[in-house]
Image 1 (cartoon, rainbow, N blue to C red):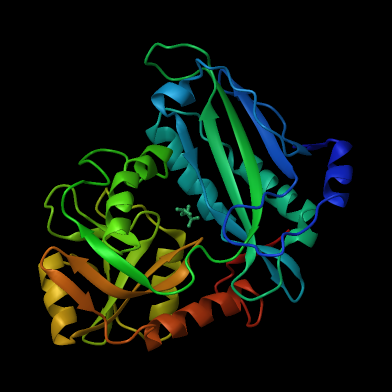
Image 2: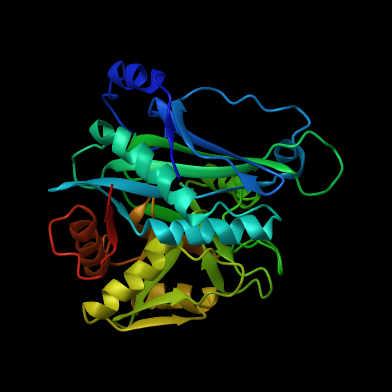
Amino acid sequence: MSIYIDPAVALSLRGYEMPERLGFGTAMAPVMFRAVCQDGCWSNGELIPYEPLSVDPAAKVLHYAQSCFEGMKAYRTGEGIALFRPEKNAERMAYSAKRLCMPPVPESLFLDGVRTVAAYCANLVPGNSGESLYLRPFLIGTQADLTVSASTSYEFYVIASPSEAYHSGNMRLWVEREDARAAVGGTGDAKVGGNYAGSLLSIGRLKERGYDQSLWLNPADRSSVDELSGMNFFAVIDGALHTPALNGSILEGITRFSLIDLARNLGYKVVEGTIHIDELLGQVASGTCTEAFACGTAAIISPISVIGDDGGSYKLSQVPGPVAQHLRQALLDIQEGRVEDHFNWMLSV
Ligand code: COI
C-alpha cells in the first residue's frame, strides 16, 4: 500500500528537540501514522504531524471503550533501526480488536505504520542500552452514536515516544485480594484500555501502603497468581523459572513468550503452571523462591524486591537475581544488535 507523507512532517521533525531526561512515555515524537476504516474498508496510511485528535463527543470509544492498543519498541542497533517481533504485535492487536468487535488492522497496514514511524523518527531513537523509541499503535471506534453497538468507523494511529524502561529499580508488589483485574470470560487476555482503567484504584491504594504494583490473582479462584498491571510475572523456585500458564485472563506478553524461548535456549528449566499465592509467599519466606521479576515490552525485566499483603511483607533474597540479570542482558543483546539474532526476531526498518 502506498503511504502518504504529509510535507509538514519534515518541518516537525527538523524542529524537534530530544528531551534532556527521557522518562517513560512523556515526550512524544512530532509525527504520527493514521489510517481510517469505514464500514470495513481501510484507507491507505498517512504520516502526519503529531496533533490532538478531533473526536466527536458521542464517539463510541468515549462511552463504550471500543479501544485497543499495543506496546512495542524501535531499537538502535549497530546497523540501523530495528523492531522486535512486530508481527506478533500485529497478531495480538487483531485478537484484541476482534474481542471488542472492531475490524482488525490488516497486518500489512500495521507493519507499514510502525515501520514508517520508526524510519522517520530514526534520529529520535536513543542510543543508551535499555532506552528505545517506544511505539504505541492504537485503534478506536469513532462513530458518533450512543446506542450500544459496534462502531461503523475506526481510526488507527501509531504514536511514538523516546523512552527509558518503564520501571527502573526494584519493585514492591502488593497482593491484590480485593479487586480483580479481569473477569472470567472477560477481556483479560486482550490489550484493551478498560483492563488498565480497572487497575488504577488498586494502584492508588497500594501506593499509600508504600508498594509499587499490584500482583493480580486469577479472577476465578482468587488464589493463584495471574500478572501485574501491564507486566507478566516470573519467579525462580528451586532453581527453575516459573510463570503462570495462560488461562484466558492473563495478557500473553510478547516479552513473556520470548523470554520463555530464550531461557530454555540458555538451558533453564521453565515451568508454565499454576502459582498459588500462599505457597509462593511461603517459598519466599523459606528462601526456596530466591528471585522474582516482572517483564513486559515497556518494563523489559524489572526485579521484584518485596511481595506483601495483610499478613506481612516477604523479601526476595536476590534482587536483582542472577537469572533476571542474565535474561535481561541476553534479551537486550539481541534487541540492541550486540549478538547474532539466531531466533530471527528483529526486523530492520
Ligand atoms: C507495554 O509494556 O508496552 C505496555 O503496554 C504496558 C504499559 C502499562 C506501559
